[in-house]
Length: 478
Image (cartoon, rainbow, N blue to C red; front, side, top):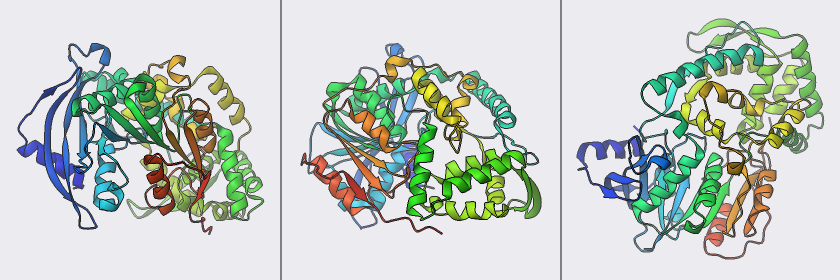
């Protein structure tokens, strides 16, 4: 059992019900508990639950409620009215887990970066919060036909509609799972725990949420750190960003023909899909799987998330150009059997944030010529109707204007939340600084780099930031 899960089990078993009323939220349980870090230091953390309305417009009645799980690390030697709150990405990742791991793995050395208490929350629908909207329902994608939008999308829509109906039959109002309501939750946590102001730490979707919090509660935010930035109108990705990243990979891997080779493989599979016999890990039996262009595009997008898988791309396409599809077929089998809903919260959050007409026109235009088409937005962008997501509108998607000091970190090899996102966000944040993290993709270790830790420490001390980039270890290509 993971440490943060153990903490919540302990709460359930031994914590007496304790309630503190705020404007629209209640602390319904909390408990202090020691947590020992890898460096031997011990920290007192508070864990508990805060009850919030599912729709903040109905806060006075609290007729339908959500329980948010939280963790707080006290900085007893630095008391104050401000705290740092960690907003996880996904949507659907656990902020409680993130903060718990910061304590367990980072210890005193990491926590010394912060000038106040640290709070993690499991956003509505995720982690230890209740209700949890995670669901392991497979899309049941066929193996004997190559992947395609025409084949897969109806199966995904049918499954999504069924799962959505099941949640609604339990009295869960899925329309409550959107970024505006989640921003209200962040403010409720602030009020319930007694802080005047917050510093927001967001990653990926967490940056999208952080900007929504800033827009709604501008006077309550001290500063922001945004890692992998996603602005109000950047939920759906621009296909051209994938081509830009592939071009950088081509240069760094000394593979000048990479884009041409990729297009050649994709064009070949569009005309003539292949069938490959692979071993099914679940049964250890040989099974035939058909591979088409859509499969290769889909798997390439997944590989672009992580430097370790980026390192395999040039070699993988060299093999496929020579007619060897064994490795890609093995991956396709794994992904097709595993691909499913996973989280209703994720689909509702992304679907309700949506995109402006201009953004959709950009996506459609770029997808027509991009090497990977619109796979960056598949399947989420196509499933909003099946989930019944209610669009939050163009006012929600307008840029956020604020003088709040903001540090933005963006990976140069990240097509999902690229450097261009950060630059666009910074246009209306005059005290924002965009730092390009070289050799980084969407996933990189923020606290594992001494240079990034130094940057964060200086930002939190209000010292000037002069650098424009930070360089991580280069990718070693196969």
